Picture 1 (spheres, helix red, strand yellow):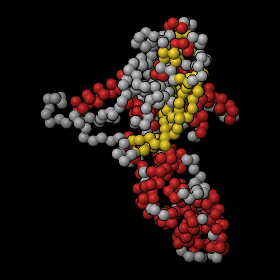
Picture 2 (cartoon, helix red, strand yellow):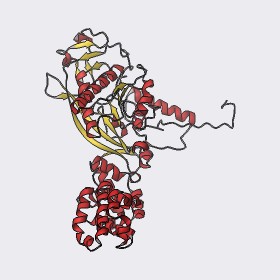
Picture 3 (cartoon, rainbow, N blue to C red):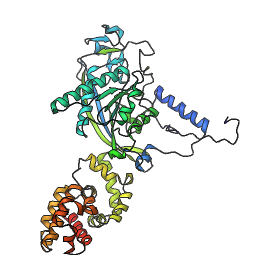
Picture 4 (tube, rainbow, N blue to C red):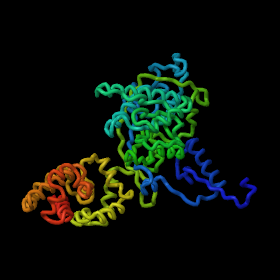
Length: 488
C-alpha cells in the first residue's frame, strides 16, 4: 500500500547503528555491514542519530562499569601460556564426544582450536568452572550473588554447563552462610529450552531467577530493567550483536534506584567499543558455526579434560563520552581526572566550593555541569567504595585533594571543633544541633537540608524547632551549622 500511496510516509526506528568504523574481519561483522547498507539503501540517510554514549551522558541509560579478565591456558609440554590449543596439546588428555560420550581419537581433532572455537567445537569444563568461579567472586564483591545477571554463552550445551556451575557455587555459598538458597537461582534461557517462558519470572521476581544463561534469546527485544550484570562468556564478532547484548543492562530501574550496571568481559568483547580494546587473538575469517549441533564442516563437538586454566583481572573501566561525543571506556583514575578538571574549571578553590555546596540552588547548578549530567560523583563514590562518604567529600577529594572523611567522622569533627560555638548557645538548642549532626552521619547533606529532619525521634527528643527558636531563626542556625560541618 505504501508504494501505491505517494503521500505515505515511512518511518524507520532501529537500534542498528548507522555505520561501523570497525576493523573486524569476521563473517558476523560483514553481515553487519550488509544490514547497515540495506537500511540506508531502503530508508536513506538517517535524520537523527543517538549513541549509547549520549544516552548515558544525558541520563537516559544506566551507567556502565567494565571489568575485563584475561584467560590463559597452560599446556603441559610448555611453560608459556597460550590462548589457543594445538592438536599436540590434546594428545595426553581425555577426549570424548560431547553428544555420545564415546572416546575420541586425537586424529579426529582439529590441528588448532583458537579461542573462538572454545565451547563451540571444543568444550573445556575446567575453563567453564574457572570463569564461573571468578564471576561469582565478583558478584560477592559488588552486592552479593542475588543480582539479576545475563551470561551470554557460545551454545546450548555451554549454557547448561554455566547454569549448573553457578548453581553449585551458589549452593555452597548458601551452605557456608547458613542461608536457604533462592529457588531457580541460575537457569538456562535459550530458544531450544523454551526459555521465553522464564522471561516473566526473570523480569518480575525479586526472590528467584537471578542468573540467566543464554545464547541468542536475550540478545534483543527483552526489557528487564533490573539487570545489574551483563557477562560475555562467548566470543562476539558482530558489533551490532555486541551493542544489543550490552543494551540489556542499560535500562534504568527507578524502583530499585539502579544507577549503573557492570559488563564482565571474559572474551575481549569490549574491544568493539573502540580501538583501545583490540582482540589479543587477531581477526578471524572463519564462521564460528551454528549454535547447536556440529559445525558446518561436520566436526565433532569434543570435550577435553585436564586443561590448566588461569584467569587474571585485566582492569576496570568506566564508560564515558569523549569530546567528540563518542562512547569511550576509560580507567576509573582517568574518569576521576576528567571530573576534577570539570569541577576545578568552574570552581578553582576549595573555599569557594564549600560556599557553593551549602547553597542548594548553586549546588544544583554545579552538579548539572559535571560529567554524565551530574551522576559522575555518584559513580565515583560507588566504584571507589566510598558509600560512607557524603558527595561533598567525594568531590573535595577528587577536585582539591582534601582528605575525605566519612559522614560519621565529619559529624564527630563538627562537635569537637565547634564545641565552643555550641556551648555559647542555650543547652536545648545545642542539643538539637547535635541531634541534627547525628542525622548528617546517617544521610549526609540531604538530611541536613531536609525539613523532615525536625520530625526524627532524636531531634524531637532534643527539643526540636522550638528549642532552636530560643537561639534565633531555626533555618539560620541550621545553615550556620551546615557551614561549620563542611569546615570541620
